[in-house]
Image (cartoon, rainbow, N blue to C red; front, side, top):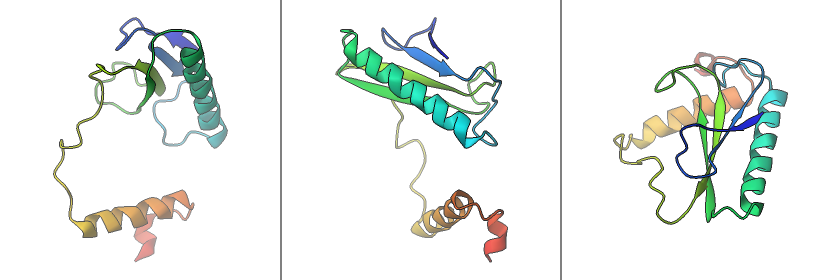
Length: 122
């Protein structure tokens, strides 16, 4: 379901949420995730076609506890234009050593491919 937010970052800011309570991405069915993204895409296209000023679209997925009052997975679809000050700061965390990135990549790939626990990789 899609609804206008009461605290928009920019005019036209929309929230896409699942009807079923989903506290996080962990454990949701792929079909539910695909449907959430399908609705997100439709909203993004509608914003672009609506005539509302929008030079681009920011998508922001809210998952997990930090900065959420109600734990419910949702996607923000935010019209963006030149003076938009919304975004992440890539300098917030120090650059990890390459070996750490390689280790993380292997763990991610292990889970993405459905092999279970990365501790089995040893």
